[in-house]
Amino acid sequence: MSKNDAIRFLQEIHQHPKVQRKLKGLKGKDAIRDLIALAQTIGYHFTEKEYRFAVVALSDGELEAPSLDNLIRDMGLNQQVRSGFREIHDQ
Image (cartoon, rainbow, N blue to C red; front, side, top):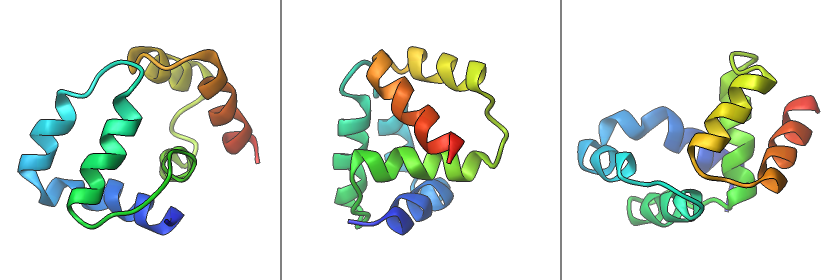
């Protein structure tokens, strides 16, 4: 499992149109878990924590806390995950 795999997945996903279509259908509290399972089918291996790290790392300041909160809410994630994003973002 690797943060680098998570980052590569986010950077290279545009090369996988079939996977992109499946990602668009992911919603709700299991969206990240399902995304990770889908990523594994094409050779990317990372944990939820590594995925969250990659999202924040690639945002490079583009997502301020309110925007990040909106994204997390739209994905159907809970307050605990919001706190985890903030902890990673603030490091």
